[in-house]
Image (cartoon, rainbow over all chains, first blue to last red; front, side, top):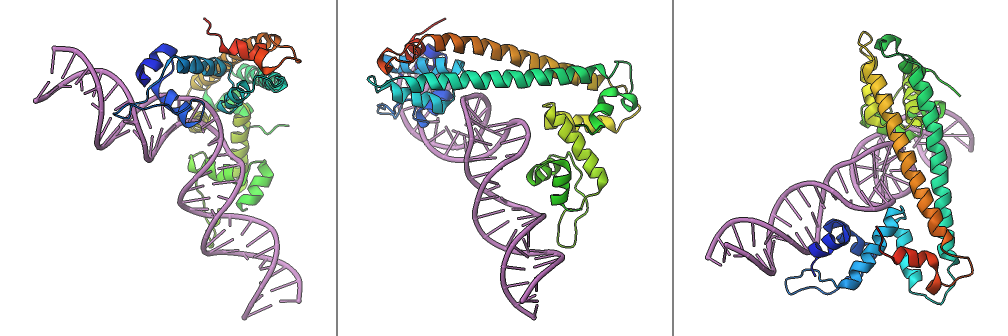
Length: 132
Length: 132
DNA sequence: GCTTGACTCTATAGTTACCATAGAGTTTAG
DNA sequence: CTAAACTCTATGGTAACTATAGAGTCAAGC
């Protein structure tokens, strides 16, 4: 199977696949006589794994780690748990930041009525004031 | 005042200031004989304005727009209002995305107990399964 | 006068996970 | 046999900086 078919089967773009290969998430496999990448069904599964991880916003570095861990079946999986825990924490932090931001933006928005001119615009005035 | 002092007064890094200049958020002002940038107190205010906007996660392009608008005092400020509204919406969307992500990550995390081995790790298994 | 240190200058590379493009080669269908 | 569709590599772009290199400037102390 060539890269285009793999892309269709997995929903990844052709460039992503080449990118993952460069980043060592996919082994560089055989090439055809004309130097085209050739894949089999195992790659389809691997790529779906990667896609699934990406949908959870895991970084390529983290995914690389998971793949490596996956090849040590006997080891404990605390590292995996830790990674996910850490990720959950990061996301929680980011949500809090954004909620703060949301509040600030709402306050800002309320400082101007729509019929105002730039000169009197409460938003621009607020932004110009030095605070905290 | 040279760039280092401006940086200290505003809490921006020296590089950021140069970056803002390159991005046309600050006018390129006078230079000293030795080609050092020279600033006055007006620049301090301008930079504080920019910093305030950045703390609200407005992009440099949006800030550039606001600065331009600010120079048209007679015009209506609907554009300003629209920009802020749009931003609020974007942030709300992002928060929702992250909350979805949070839920997925929690579910994933619950699929593995800490004492497991890689081979049996519920997380890795879950990630390997093709879904949806 | 000279040196040392602190400061500044420009230009460039790196960050992240790709997307877009150029220019070339390969394969396949008509 | 040719044209379309596909693939290849290499490069540049995204956002808002940070970090670095290598060079120049300036003030103070000896």
